[in-house]
Length: 109
Image (cartoon, rainbow, N blue to C red; front, side):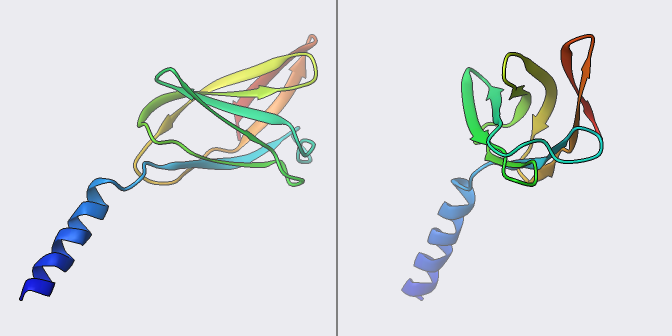
């Protein structure tokens, strides 16, 4: 009986401290993935999470906070930003990076 109570307590503890959601997806230029090693940041509640894209233009960030975030793609000499939301679960956001009038823009795929 004691081991059952201890097991239930441990399970309850892990559900309380479970991490928030994962934000992941790809960034393309419309026809192909952007280059590997492009810096991607996600800012939420004064905290910034930073990763780099892989050879497929993919990114994956575990965000502890929930709510509205700002994803920023850092190119050579400019940045492109867009709003997204972090939830308790994994959420996929795929983006198309466009350059118009020498300005980088992100839009949802």
